[in-house]
Structure formats: C-alpha cells, structure tokens
Amino acid sequence: MKVINTIAALKSLLEPLKLTQQKIALVPTMGALHKGHVSLIKIAQLQADVVVCSIFVNPTQFTDPKDLEKYPRPLEHDMKMLEDAGCNVVFMPSVTEMYPAPEEWHIDLGPAEFLLEGEFRRGHYQGVTQIVKKLFDAVNPDVAFFGQKDFQQVLMIKNMVAHFEMPIQIVSCPIIREDDGLAMSSRNIHLTEADRKNALVLSQALLFVKNNFSSLSVPQLLEEAKKLINETPGVELDYFTIANGETLLPEVDKSHHDIVALVAAKVGQTRLIDNMILR
Image (cartoon, rainbow, N blue to C red; front, side, top):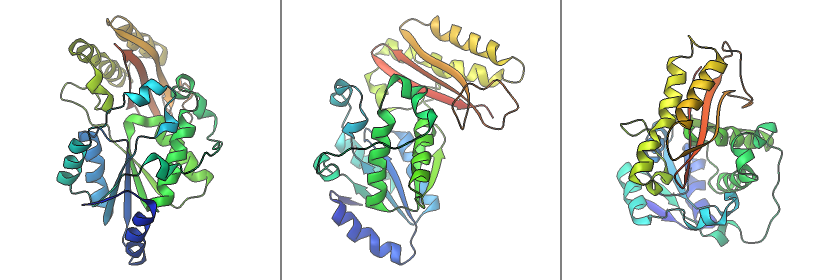
C-alpha cells in the first residue's frame, strides 16, 4: 500500500497505469473509517485494477466550525483498516495541498441542492462538490464509489460530473448496518449509550415504511414513522420524507420507479442521517 501526500506524486504514480489501460477506482473518504468504507473498497476491487482511497477532512463542506473541529481523525486505525482491506494507494493531502490559494466555487447543482440536508446545512454541497472535483482531477479515476447513506450527496456529485461532462462512472453502494440496524457512520462514536439505543428508532421507522409500503398510503406511512421518532426520548427530528429519488421532492405516486425514504435527526448532541430505497 502506497501512501501519497501530493497531487504531483499521485499523478506520476497513476498516469503510467492509465496508459496501460488499467482501470482506476477512487473511494473518497474523510477518514474515521468503518466497515461501510471497507465495503466500498471491496466493491471497487471487483470493478477496477487499482483502488485509491483518499483521506481528507474537507473544511469547505462544514457549515459549523465546531463540527470540523471535533471530526474524528483516528489515523493509525484508518491505515490498518486500509492495509487489511488490500487498498493499493492512500492519498492523504494537507489542506494547503488541496487549497493552495483562496478560491471562489459555485456551480449549479439543481434545485435538489436546497432540499433536506441542503436546507439544514446551507452551502454544504458546494463544499462537497468542490473537493470531489479536486480529487477527481488529481486521481483521474474511471469510476468512483460512494455510500448510499449519503443519498443526496451522491445525487449532487452525479450532477457535478454531468455539469463538467467528466467521463467518470459514479457508483452508489448499499448502506452497511450494525447488527441492530443502526447505519454505520463516523459520527456514531459521539453517541452515549442511551443515545445509541435511541438512535435505533431511525432505522426502525424506515423499516416500518418499507414493510408497509404496499398496504398504507404515503400520508399514513409518514404519520406513523414521524410518530415513532417523535415519541423516542432524546431524538429531535429534522425531517422524514418519502421522496422521488431523482428530484428529492415529496413523492405521492407509489408507482414511480425511484422512491426513497430519508430521515435526519439529532440524537443527543449528534446529528444522524439514514435512508432506505423503497422502489
């Protein structure tokens, strides 16, 4: 496993591989890795010759400076996980490497940018697409892998790739859950024991919607799911929606081919998101 810190060194390693028609995959992360990240690497290994994993805590996507400050950075643990997973290249740049000078960034990501997470974390997806574009330029991958847990993020990255007409395939990989259903997240380490137990209501509400999708109307499903969450102590709901998977607008037509239930809530002091594809 090679560990690289500069774009120049990364390019000199990867460009000769591209010339020999080797397929390059990128798994972008902010570190604090868990089994969900490892699953992305495993899927990438099946579809590419070389897997690059980036670790970079990107300052431009944090809407709250305190959030950036307390973001976990367990580097030794991350390196061991990547080594064990058989990752080929780790790209770990500094902030000055990725942002050598102040820059303006704003692109049209479509109306979905301002819904759901976009409403609660204004400017977040501009910061996400800004860094992902930089990583794509540095790695020049054929394919990039992201977790479905950040459903809206994957959509925004697809919109960014279309905007720049980049020849990169974006693959969304299934959510990896703990045995009790909690979606794996780097933020889970901030949960107290009580929070951890209360957080299970998010996946339980999603599962209720999935299991009853054919028998209840959309308003009934939403009412029951919200009630479940609102009755759980220590959980403060931001949103629970049944949405069109392409626009993220509320979807009432259950026969639509792409429907997803999405939830965000503050559990104790930690904000969690989750989702489940219904169709």
